[in-house]
Image (cartoon, rainbow, N blue to C red; front, side, top):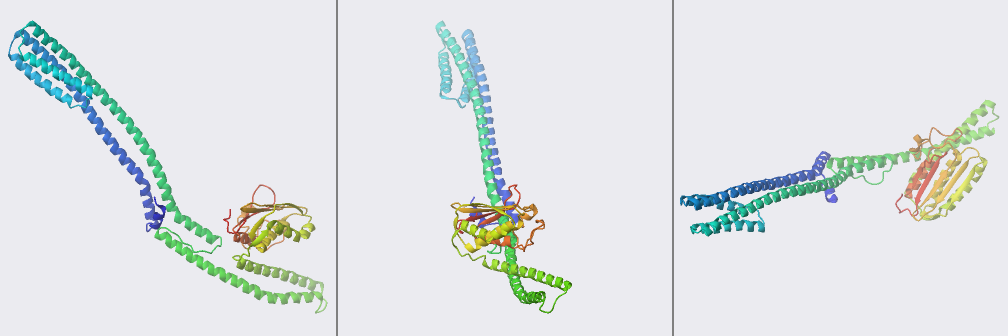
Length: 486
């Protein structure tokens, strides 16, 4: 089956495609059954012919034996009685003898069997010629009687030939049945194998548009809106694919509107927020006069909430900047082990303040990548590990280099990630509800930005479940961004 040809000429509807698929899969089975029926019919005809020939051989040999016995009896009577009318009886019996031998000669005899039959016919003709000479001497009569005794012996040979013919036909029928059984088994196995191959091909043709729809839905569900959605298949599924592409376009528009809204809102909020923070700072410093204890508490609340609001606005701006820079990679030669070391040095004081111990296993890893984006990835993973590790805990970092890819593992000794959160841990603005009691509530952007930067490098970041306590993140990056991610 030419799969490319079939892909170009799909039926108009998915129902027609299914009906055609069932028909194509059933076709080898139907052809196999028809061929088996023809073969069995031919075998039946051959068996019927063999049975008819065996029955003819048995009947003719029995009649020939009776006719030769009749000829010998008539000759003996003639030699004793001398009645000329007995020669007429001989002629009638002889006529039956000749008809029987002719019938035997039409059977499928081999060369030796035909030679034996011809000897019998020639012997009878010689005896008939001798009988027409009207033997008068005792020697002639004795020779004639002995000749018919020899003819009876030859006739027994013909009977034996008939029995051999019957046995040969029976063996041929048995061999034909064995051949038929082997051929039918081979046809059955070939039909099954061909049916399986056709079923696989048809399954591919049927599943291909469904697989394309599934990929398109997964693409939309993951928030990836680049690339046109096209579904090759029946017209109704192609129409469904076009509607999904329309939905993709609408989602792109909504995503752009959302980003524009967040950017404008973030910038618009920064100006009044700055004034609010400066005003609360002035109140806290007593610029408007001394504050009472109650007023001081209110000012402290204003300072705390304004600082929290500023962090949220900065997170929104970071999200916007990350979204805009995803498609832009400033590629260059990067020593990832040095990047990891630099990030750890930046977090050294923070880790020491919490009494955290660091375990490092860093191999030299050189790859073609964007150094700034990889630094953000490592920074987010390390800061996340520091934030979730308990006082006096351990953070482990392992970097393994290879010819095609490098792998970075970041492991903390915190409470770990609940199974129900592992699927969404990299989503934008996701903040798990089952965190450590001492964690600082984050914005839900760090891991999402890390994932997007890794995916931009054709890599992968994932949560590894190895049964150990704490969270285990693994980043896999190709040595060159053109390489296919594993």
